[in-house]
Image: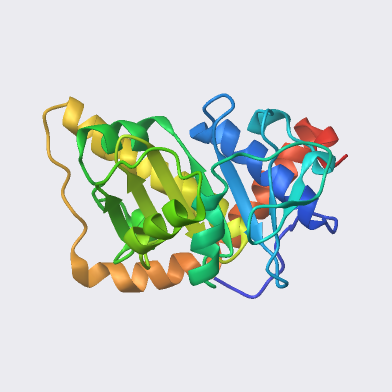
Amino acid sequence: MTDRPVPGIGRALTVEQELACALRILAHEGWQENLSGHITWADDDGDMWVNPWGMWWSEVKASDIMRVSADGEIRAGKWDVTGVVFIHTELHRVRPDARIIVHNHPYAATVLSCIGVEPVISHQNACLFDGELAFVDEYEGAAETADAGRRLAEMVGKASGVLLANHGALVTAETIGAACYRSVTFERMCRFTLDALQAGRELRPLPGASRSELKALLDRVTPAAYWDGAVRQLIAREPEVLD
C-alpha cells in the first residue's frame, strides 16, 4: 500500500452529521430493529451525543441528534432519549477507549445471544476482535439505572465486541469510522457462525499466530477507508441526512 491519496468524503462534517450518518449506515447494514438501539459518542467534557428515542436509525438527521450529560440528563435537542441510556453512560465512564458505543439487536448476533453461542473468529476481518470478545451471560433486563449500567460495564470489561445474553450486541471503538466498521464486521462474523450451525458444520478458527498481525493491519488502514466510502454513498442517496 502506497502513500497516494484516497478519495475521502469531500467535505467536513459536524459530530451530529457524522453520528446521523453512522446510524443510517448501520441501519442499512442490518443493525436496525425498528425503534430499538442507540449509538453514543462521548465528548471530551464528559457529555455525550446520542440518537433520539422514537426515531428509526434509518430516518435520523443531524438536527435530530441529542446531547446528554454523563448522568443521562438532556442538555440539548428537541426530542427525548432512551431510558436505558445507562448502558452507555457507565461504560463510557470507565472506558476512555470506548468513545463510541453501538448497541442494538442485529439478527445474527441476537440469535447467537439467545442460544448461548459465541462467534468464531474464522475470517481474516474478524481478527479485529482477537482477544476482545465477551459474552455477558446474565440477563438483567433493561439497564434503566446507573447501578445496572455499572454492573453491565463490569461484565463487559475490556471487550470491544460483546454479546448480551437474550438481548443483542454491543460494539465499542475510539472513532465513529472504526465503530461502524467493527459493527459491520461483528455482525458478519456472527452470521458466519450462525450459518455454519444451520448447515451442521463447524467453522475452522483462524490460527492464533496469524491474528495479531492481521488485527494491527486492519485497525490501521481499513476503518477510515470504509467510513469514507460508506458516507460518500449515503450522502449521494440520502443527502437530507446532513440537515
